[in-house]
Length: 139
Image (cartoon, rainbow, N blue to C red):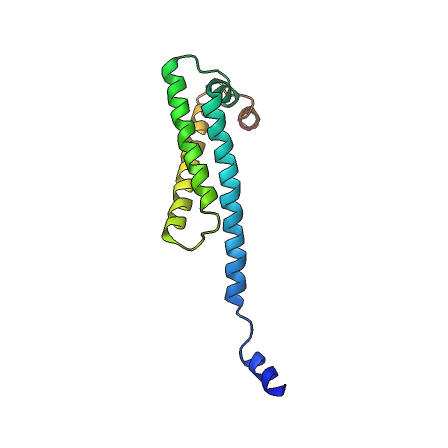
């Protein structure tokens, strides 16, 4: 029994393993949340493109080409959502890191595009109006 205690003291529990568990749990949560958000947005654009755009920008889509492009974007979001959902247990591979990088790039692009639309005083919908209302008060 004494030898066992000495062996345990000589080999303390692996702290890096605990850090990896916590890190992997965080990545799993990011993947899961991203998947749910992107799947919801993708389905909304596929099924109700005009209403979804009206919620974001304040005006519905009316032209058939605009509806088609919105549905193509919805398909892309749906695809990203599925990829994140399937990758939620994979935290260490290059593909998983690539997916995170792609999602960060996509999200930054969306923030830039919608932010530019709001700054140019283009109409914004119910979803974005609180953000830009706060910005107007600060000017």
